[in-house]
Amino acid sequence: MRLFGKAGKKSGWLALVLTADGVQAVAIERRTDAPPRVQRAVTIAAQQGNPSATLFRAARELHAPNHCCTTLLGAGAYQLLLVEAPNVPAAELKAALGWRVKDMIDFPLEDATLDLALLPPPQNNSAHNQQAFAVVARNSLLAPHQQLFSENKIALDAIDIGEMAQRNISALLEPEGRGVALLSFDGDGGLLTVSFGGELYLARRMDINLNQLLDSDADRLQNLHDRITLELQRSLDHFERQFSFVTIAKLVVVPVANGALRDYLAANLYLPVEQLDLSALLDLSEVPELQDGAQQTSYLLAIGAALRGGEAA
Image (cartoon, rainbow, N blue to C red):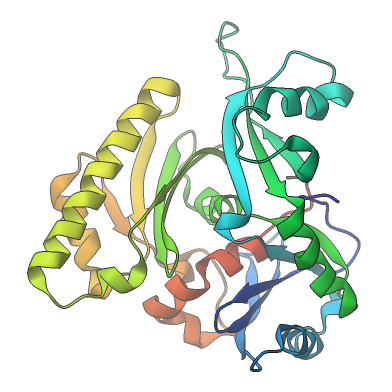
């Protein structure tokens, strides 16, 4: 089993993401002379007690055989670890990385699938050891996920994770030569990523979810905003010490509660803070409902998963 994969000869990626409400399906066409075009973004409502039937319907309605297909693992199905890359030949890298992370995970390595993403070595700094993200997924959770797609005759070209999906969006926001921090929230919690040169350099989860940020109680909301601000300050300070060669140009925040979170962070952080607007990055002409900020927040990771390029992750 492989976590990451490559695009085939089909046109564009289709992300089929299992959620509590059903299946989020997003199809995106990458173009060389224009922004990526979102062709479809729909949620197929769950059929009670039958996730397989829901997935089958999504694949049929979105014409899955005409696309390269991907899905996302849930945040609890894997661990993402930033480690020093072993100094071994490329063919031996994955095995060597396994030995490096086996004591960092809470289940036996032989019960896991491992994949990796190497970070580029910093320019003009040969003393800086190359880093790598290791993704370790439990086979007991990965195999049933794959089986669900297989029994519905959906050929998965890749299985991805939320951090890499968010990186795909962040990469479109980067000014030349500088990095971008992107902060999102959904029903599972918050996710902060930093990308630079199209690569993921930082991923941090927060135990504050989107529903909490929609609370109408001013005191509770103030407390949440304070916690998010403190976590951002700590994470970005640590990032600057670890990757001093990366300058973060700005923090971009998904639309939350009419921009209240963005306004609070802009007043309390040293970085410029902007609100994400996918219409400035993508062609949404075929999915006008995604002009709405709440819809952009809801579909963010599915859109990111469908923004895969043809390269290996």
